[in-house]
Length: 425
Image (cartoon, rainbow, N blue to C red; front, side, top):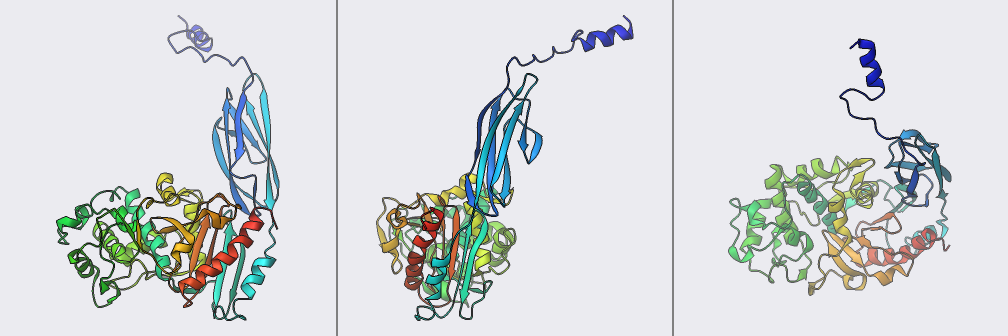
């Protein structure tokens, strides 16, 4: 057989090769073409996603051509934008349109509320910043605090510490539901009555550990010595059975982080969370860091952290935490348990807790958001919070005003924000 004949057979599908794929007989179908939101803050990001049947490629105008038949594309919306998806095959083309509106907000009422804080002697100084759709839409400060000032945030440290622990889960080094003795022994003599305690219980304040051990405030101690003191103290309740808010369980979680990472907790936190999320002013300190309450941070730093959780574990286009793990903060993990120890004012605003985050009572959202809204107020008045339905994160940074003051200001600011986001100004 001649070489020319072989080439001819090959071109016609002859010979021993696989038969050519059948040509389509109908034009492609667009099964879905949608945006993660059809109205976003100007400069905010949305995800456009699509699925098709029978298409070879799709064009997404005005962004790109020759894309896969099913896929997604993150875009930043500076102005209201009109997108056209064209699904193509050899028979024809099918198109579908989608509009995403860029929204501008009026924060006059919000600024007026903040302007009243210092003249009315509610606070000496404050920083406030609000991000919607991953873009800062409003910031304000008063007194001697600047927009990027860093202050100690007390219990607002818990959400930070918990997220750092979740990076160990991400990397397969920690199981939240494994008994903590697996990680602590032999460095800590962990007694058998506490054998059921897990890291999840530590981070949810359901471990049953005593909450009145003073070593967490002793800078002369080290983390191992402090955790051994906590281990030696009698249980306060049966592990897993009750919620009792305090710092000792987080001290134990901090030592687990040290053991698994081979680093001090402070270094572990910087390398695992602060540096990857570009949080240069967020730090813990000392050989016995107060894991549940000893961090300093700034408004821009903390907002970058919250945006990671709002974005389901992503930082920009890059994954930081698995989506399922990042979403765990959205559902309360203490439902059905008695609540035996609460910080001042907590019973008035919360309806649950998960991995460092309080869950706001739904009636506080006044029908303007489906939530959940979660927060982590601190003793000195700092309140970071975010709303997953309205896609916003905010932080009120105070220095030494008391948690009840911060929570009350938060409660006053929330309806002003939600009214704008719900289009009810």
